[in-house]
Image (cartoon, rainbow, N blue to C red; front, top):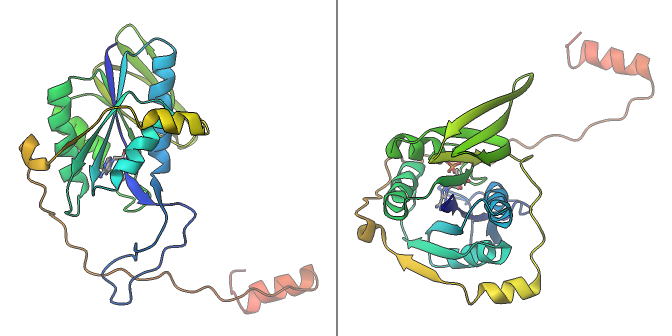
Length: 250
Ligand code: AMP
């Protein structure tokens, strides 16, 4: 198999407790630690493992967003991707726009496999992979918890309600990663240094002929309701009493 494209999004680090801006227009990202979307780290790890197993010749990491997304791409290169493409844009890039950008790169690079995260932890959309598959007219296997490549086919296990489903798609195909697919490796300093020398190309959406204007408008973002502190009860009798009279669930 020839090339694999993996998409990596720069998002607010999963350890950061995000704060909603006081005017409710969005989340405050100034001076907040940003990292690679965790599902994308799994996507890069999987692609690199395929390369290490000799099943893939080249891993290309792609990110769409502001110039700082270069850091995210360097991380992908440090995990083991061979080269990177930044699609630079200061616009808010919604899933349909990202899917169109990726489709343009798929047309250009002709990869056999495109691996995306199942969702970005900032917008929780869970749309980009599915939209890309539709736009590029490729088969898709979403939420992969196991991926086996053989004979121009990908066999994917996915967790579904009450069990696991296994399906086979013919390559080229789109696969999105679930949490249990693999455990990404720790990135070592020497690999970080090596990543600095790997090629990173920057293109603009216009270069790919893609119009990225947002289609959806966020009306308001609000903090979740504060939860009040719990109380300790003395014994089961007191618990039943409270469930009965206060929570009224019995
Ligand atoms: P979403 O549909 O927004 O939940 O994102 C699903 C997946 O699409 C992510 O895990 C990424 O692999 C990919 N993706 C979404 N937005 C971007 C972006 N701006 N740059 C690169 N990949 C992205």
